[in-house]
Image (cartoon, rainbow, N blue to C red; front, side, top):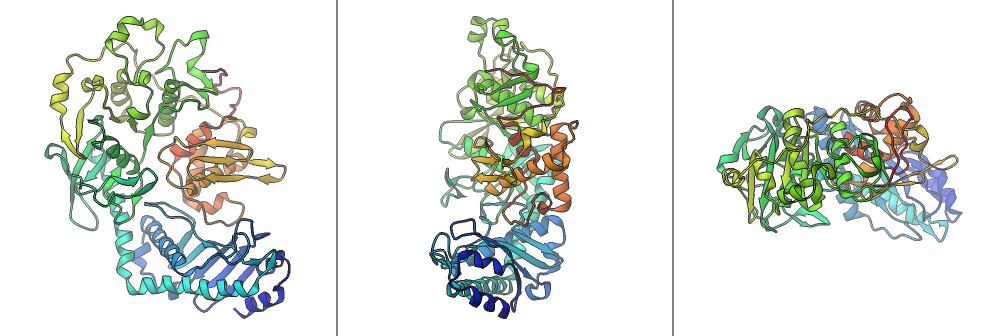
Length: 571
């Protein structure tokens, strides 16, 4: 502390760049402060800092981090406590630009594997950003002392006090996450793709507020679909089991169809205690499929769904810079299957109608040889019986899927009813099968290394997330706004750095894109998120392989090596 105080005294009133002298490590009574990088001016990104608290000081019980799942949950809990302390103890606004800001990763309702807080053998490392205060463009040492010797000390003390006063809170958080992982691991053995516990609270406050709706009706499964799963930390839990196969969710408008599907699609994540979805779990490979008018497609075999396009376009090697609703939805399915998806989640509201259904009148009017699209309703059984791929589908405007669904659930005032028998009775005849056998063999696609460059200008790379909407990657901007299971900008940054690491360290010009990216994810799992960054940061979170592959596939600049499929054309 004395060394840091002397340095501040020396640079007081000098130009802002004099703050660079603070880079280094300083010992406080309860922690060590490491200032890794000092910002160049008060308007730049805040300085990158770390706090280290040794095991004896923080006193974490070893069972809290006894395995990887519990360690990630504990890191999440500590990060949330530090963020809460910032809100309580940090004044902010201490001069020009961002002066006075102290910030850590923004935590939502999901528990993600991040690098904002790390627990190693009971010791804790906290990574945060600190905007050193200025007066104009000069060092303001007085305000810096307040931030470093008062506010920062208060943050650590608040964290330590919270852990000592309520040690059970950390256990509840960690146990809850471990329970969710345990529930999810039971799904496949039970023949399920998802499970929604009784008394879960599914509705959210709004489309931009993911917190639970305070007066939401508790979920209650129909008795015919109820089953029971075991918990590690409590009594068994009963609820609705969504079985492998084809599940159709129907009901009137505003009765909860899409709300249920949304809960299922977010069930790939663990949620914090009190979220209402802590016991809603989904197959970890489940992927939300939708149409994406205008997206780019590069060398994808969409022939299982789209064939015989005008002008002899080859749908076995289909590329487009302006895909239609149907071709984009077909490509999304093929890409997801290639990346390992075994459950597809689809809502008619975000689907292309001509991709979903083709009724008898239209079949009678438009000859088979004139219609290139094989609708999903004619392929959905093949996906399950030939490939083991399940589908959970929301439909409110067509009964065409009654004849192919294994289970039909009607949402009635946010409560589910089993109407399978009624729906099947209404399905007077089977869907007319015009399609041939489903053949799906993912083609090897090797991207050209040059198109994977994150270079903004010579010697300068750029990776920047715009919430969950888009990823700036070098001079490219990748639209991810319709990749609906991304929940945090930290995941987008993780995707960007993984893409860059793949291009710089793993690309060999031979290996398939999915296999290469799978290898990168495994490297990060083994060695941590720091492996893929050129310097220490604390703002990354782990994506799934599905979203990582989706990001690369949506690059408009994506080019494939000449010995792999690729076809140019407008859709």
